[in-house]
Amino acid sequence: MNKHRLPKAGTFQIVPSVLSADFANLASEIAQVTAVGIEVVHLDVMDGHFVPNLTFGPPVVASIRKCTDAVLDTHLMITHPETYAERFAEAGSDHITFHIETVSDPKAFVKTLRGLGVSVGVTLNPATPVEAVKEVAPLCDMVLVMTVNPGFGGQSFMDQAARKCIRLRQLVGPEVRIEVDGGIDPTTIGTAKRYGADTFVAGNAIFGTSDRAAAIAALRGAIEK
Ligand code: DX5
Ligand code: ZN
Image 1 (cartoon, rainbow, N blue to C red):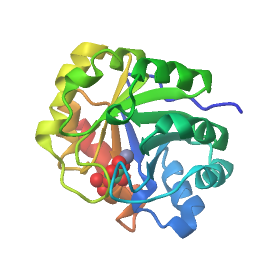
Image 2: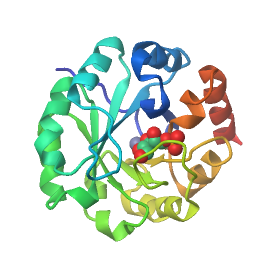
Image 3: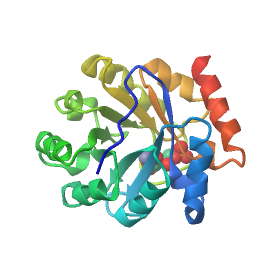
Image 4: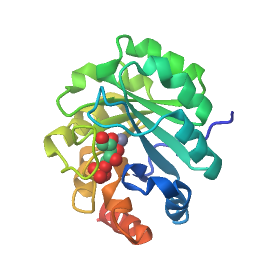
């Protein structure tokens, strides 16, 4: 299956998370954001083990794949991502992010993911230090800094966690994207940008509102300030 690629580093991207969307109408929810130029959509996969919540698996990704050309940025909040990665790649994920807390040999897993034809992300929980991803981050296309404890949308942005972007940017240079996820809204996105993030996941701030185009415009405006 031909994969879509993440937009090249150096551009700011707002990445809507469908976690706060209407799951019975994902096609039209996603169409509303791609209509205003969104290129990447974030899919939160939760297993009830690594995080205390459940969402969806490969069959839903396959259905989403059929209805959009957006880059599918798949955030695996699951134990044993090695067991499931291939199924997500086959379902149509373009980019797969795994949690450093869940994998015993992260460098080997990066290779496995590349072999599946997807681009690769590694992420770390707010309590996990940058040191944990020091070696693997430069091998990835994107590093995801969790700015809430994963599991639920609509939580408050954790500034202390976001500050890890500063050190990560020094580590990975300009070519690796740094994505932030959790509590991103027009009041916090500028802070994340100043710390070095260039890719901003937003769930509640977009799909929690009725006018998605206006919500995205507000986020874009706040990035430019
Ligand atoms: C949280 C998820 C996020 C979530 C963000 O565990 O990883 O992607 O959708 O939601 P907001 O933007 O509402 O904090
Ligand atoms: Zn996420």
